[in-house]
Image (tube, rainbow, N blue to C red; front, side):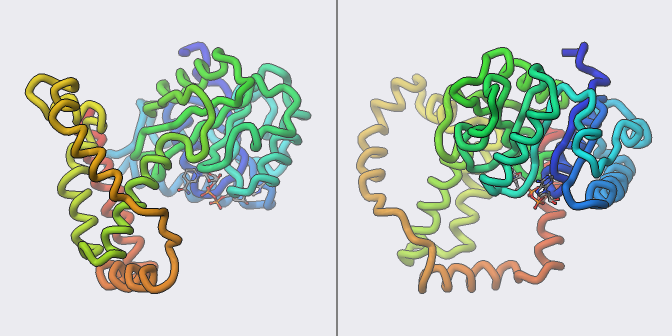
Length: 315
Ligand code: NAD
């Protein structure tokens, strides 16, 4: 993978996720060309990235082996797509979560790059077969789904289109590893990928327990942050099962699988997340964390600091 060092990656879309990808790729020594279809937006993104990178350096939280100045020298902004794509081996799309917008971006990009260029989407929830439906050569298409905030949360889900070549998955995997992310490979596409399917299962049951008056918003969040989340930050649910019985997984299944099935069978239908329960849950969470920007921003900053500390501990 070191042969790719110094090579060019084009980031299409300069919002929250486009900026994060740019910062990650720069931290790994890649040259990053950032493009946005709103003129001036990409150069505005660079101003913001500069500020973030300098603050990260001051706080000793900058990723990679290069200084802030060295990383920033790798970054350029473009209002012209063709110019932005010139020389790139990898294109990371980060436009709005809108199927038609993504389809037309990839259609346009494919017509401007050579066959070997990898086309990667940041989509959170759209299926690869839909996102890339207007691309002719879909063997080089992949979804690289980051987790917010990607600078601190290392996971990237790599999701193939049914026609994606294994070699394309391998390049994306190596690139993500090279910039310090933690990629996982999905073997086939599925709605919600892996992370959101697990996340939605947790949201569904947490919501149900509050909705049904079993527990408060504050306490269900503590169930995660002081309980399950503590160990899930280090080991996943399957390893947790394996470690939670003296003789490992087989033992665990013998002891607990009947109980798991019994409880799972009490899970009701999917909530519609609206009406009186939603009003009540909104009121409860806003009493804990008011919805004004200052409170949310302070909370996000605290989250990012803790995530960074956790990431350092895990190294
Ligand atoms: P955003 O709204 O912050 O940014 C989108 C950017 O794309 C804007 O700057 C916009 O001007 C630009 N854009 C729109 N159409 C374009 C086009 N045709 N060509 C070039 N630029 C265009 O959105 P975001 O939060 O950065 O999300 C981007 C993608 O990343 C979405 O698909 C989203 O689902 C995914 N994602 C988001 C998160 C998250 O938590 N925000 C996490 C993982 C993945």
